[in-house]
Image 1: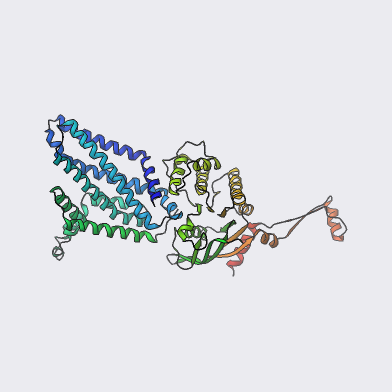
Image 2: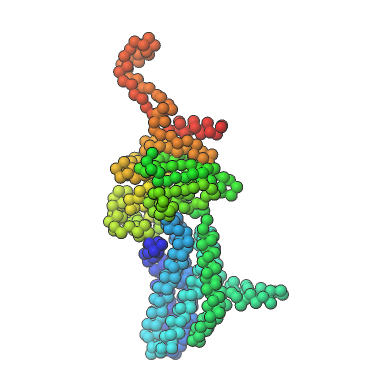
Length: 246
Length: 269
């Protein structure tokens, strides 16, 4: 399983469009902060705005890595080759999730370093509290990417393509599904169920809010873990007997 | 037959309501060069996919590798070429490096060795720019990475020119004869396969209709070729049984003829 992971990581680092997107995102970050500075923005406000930047960047990072980790593999059918040489299907699913965790973590750390360096370049620097906030923001965004990818994987492993999975990922990231569920809560009969309190997005937002306030919301964390375990199990189950084409 | 390295017993497989494999029994011995033939959609690729774990099966038993080994362990002994599992943005070396890491082959020189064998050692272009023949050769190269004990090749000569076909035949025979590699190969080019394999499994109507050897083919169609210095006189002389025969050669019947004859027979059975 680790060989599969290592082969894929090396392969992804050689993927030129991915590198271009990552560099482009770094340039956009530089541009946004530079323009803010030119327009006379207060240096201290950069640090406060970093959370927003990281949120937007993580959206793009998740999508980029989703296509690099899953899209290329489905197109080249290298997953079939991995299974053919004796890697079990559950190991393939877990490997893909680990890949996504690793690649998004590398990207977010890179953007975190770039963002902090830019704040240093444009203002007087960050205090310890602001630095911790940035780290926590990055951590929460990473959990968000992984949680949404984990749910998206069910559809991708079932369909053997990234098409609909990518749409689901986008719907989760922009909160469309949460909105839809929120709207359902207005329907008589559903309102008493409080479904909107049990969505993954609700748990992630509650966890983030608590974490940034210096606390840990254990019930939100438990909700995230339940979604995580359920998503992973479902992916393994749908992929277990799936017919794989060459 | 040597100790079997792949055995299928009563394997059944359906796609929806259509049963494509109705109880496949097949045993491939160690060091064998086995040809699998059948119509399009007969189930040859499905048999390969079942062996490789890419397709599920309903009933039956599958064993790969050595006695007592798990199927996953057994699969690690297989190199295969079924489709083209390559990344378009990597070159031949990059793609083989990917599979070298995946197969956990520590020898970094292995990719160079295989690139030389398949004649792509000087090719610098990306996979997306390859001709079909080059893609096929890279697919065969991938199967050879790490010197597997068992080689599965599904239609490996598709898209190759006559020289390429001859090269693949020579390569497969060398791997089997000189390195003792067990090879299972399928092809639509029956004449070609007849020159390559020792034993042939004919897939028809969801079963292995017959397993035949080169000797069986020879016995099935006894053609006698006579070389004489005067054909009309020889014919007459033959009639009178008085002209000496200068050369007599017994040739094997055509696999192609045997195959179509058998299909006709089993279809009407």
